[in-house]
Amino acid sequence: MAAATAAAKEVLWTAEEAAQATGGRNTTDWQATGVSIDSRTLEPGDLFVALKGPTFDGHDYAGKAIKAGAAASMVHRRADGVDESLPLLIVDDTFAALWRLGTAARERSTARLIAVTGSVGKTGTKEALRLCLTPQGVTAASVGSFNNHWGVPLSLARMQRDAVYGVFELGMNHPGEIRELTALVRPHVSVITNIEPAHIGNFTSITEIADAKSEIFEGMDSNGTAVLNRDNALFHHLCTKAEDAGVTRIVSFGRHKEADARLIDCSLHATCSAVTASIRGQEIDYCLAMPGSHWVMNSLAVLAAASAAGADVVKAAGELANLKPLKGRGELHSIETTAGTFKLIDDSYNANPTSMRAAFEVLGRASLGNGGRRIAVLGDMLELGERSDEMHAGLAGPLEAAGIDLVFTCGASMAALHEALPEKRRGAHAETSKELAGSVVDAVRPGDSLLVKGSLGSRMAVIVEALIALGDDSPQVANGPKKANGR
Image 1 (cartoon, rainbow, N blue to C red):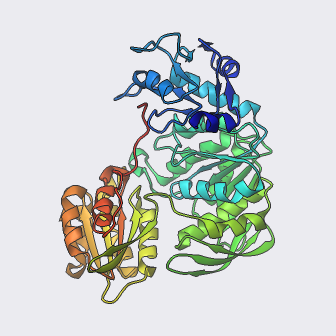
Image 2 (image 1 turned 90 degrees about the vertical axis):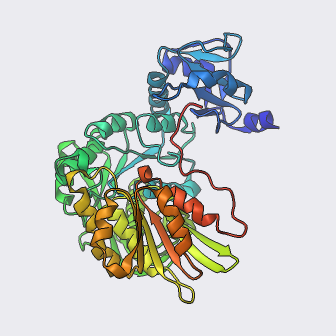
Image 3 (image 1 turned 180 degrees about the vertical axis):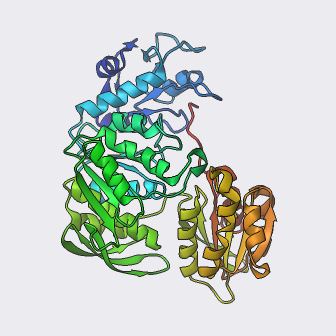
């Protein structure tokens, strides 16, 4: 059955094409319908790429991958139990070969490619673009947050031959990273969602962050379009950077009266928003199935980018009513216990000061049951540098403005927020999420709405799991997002 399913898929790479792209040598003939770097999630027909990382070596799973249905394994060394009787693509270095495979996929594609970066909203904007463009043509897109030095070439290598659109997320936390990625993607449209002090600990100023994000323009030609936030203080700086890179077509979005994709009006609700916007002169009403003013701004960027890529904007806007959150990025749970029901907003995947404030706004509009409270459970925001404690303590004001009743915190930097809160808003504080989980579980009661948020390294998914486990029919929940590896 699995083989029949794989056979029904489009052939993505033949053995000859992959060898030519990578400079490798095949031991047998094969055809692949996908590309994978993880034998645990591999699908029959995938080409398995055996990457070597600091704590794993995919070569140890090359044979297992073939037994699981992989079309072939791309390797640069022989592993135990793997010989040339198996379908192998032997290359000099699998990581370099993955980049070459991504390069070849880009060269053969006629798709209109959109690259998305920014301090906040990258993954959500990318996913919304995928949703909006798919009904208008075959659309390739990065999976999850595959936005780094292995995720981007992997995403390109997976791009369908007949793709009409491609949407790729480019991430960074140091200068120079996006420069390499945009040279690989060579986007027709580049979106910078916003510039905020995320990863500020690795930079000397927010302007330096803008410069690093502006590297995205270097992979474009003069016929490309930069989509920029007109409301951001560094908008003109970004425009100059785009022009310096030879990009003269700029489409702006925001509330600003001169924005090309301009917000006219919106009505914010607990679980959605109703939006009226002018997209490059065309007035459109649409329903956005994600709460919060930050998502309204994301939707303007999405429609501006869709327009720049030549898509039908009205059709794209209509798809925003079907938008769903990704795991750990605003996912809403209604948890039924023997005592009653409470709501949980799982925003545990990542955090910075800007996304924290946006999440507080969403929690502030969340519905409550009888006697319910709005509770924020917060872990450290990482990579904020010398001003980390100050930025954490600075969240006290936005929490009060949003009407949050009780705040639980964990982590060394969140201790500063705990001290800055008025006594009536202080829940427990602990060094780790694991230590805090019990206090949160003991405190929650029917009618409450809770937000759980923190940087991925704060491991706030532990608390999400503990809360979901209170449900009468709670499912088994994984230990948060996993980093990709070669197993």
